[in-house]
Length: 224
Image: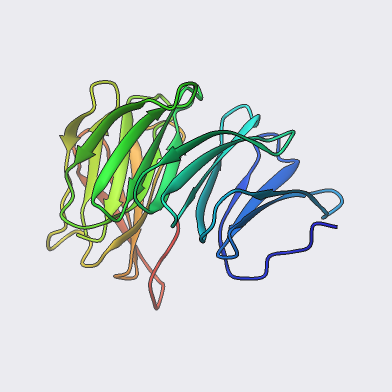
């Protein structure tokens, strides 16, 4: 038996075939669960501090994890073995490019980094936020990367050229607190963000125009 997590769970992610779920915890472990049997089928150990995020590639063959210890690990999802270890500052979040060739990571050091998965090469590093970056997401068409920060702003980056394209900053009609999570819609033309200001905002990606605000929570909204 692999046991269960012994500390708080920070992130969960469905495998694309919907047969398994990955969970990560402050106990520094990642567990892979079989949905039909509800059993833990793999326990992944490689980080030495809290694991903050996990994400599957689009084929479900690899899993990426990030940790407060400053490492990103790419795992073979069948064998449970590490195929690549990347080192940077404490990792808050990460996301795969749809083709699985690159990942983007973000950190409390205000940066985003794009990595080549096959080689571990740092493709590019970017500074645009004034505070730590909490969340990143790569659009399904691979063209754009969104990031959300403690500075209450969202930046949309051109993923191909790694240039900043839009910056819908917090103002009277935007977030009034740290942005906890950003996520693209399946078409890649709209973006949702959530914040400690208790709101969820829907944005038009091409212009940064605010489409609507969802109010209803009574405390921080940590995921959307």
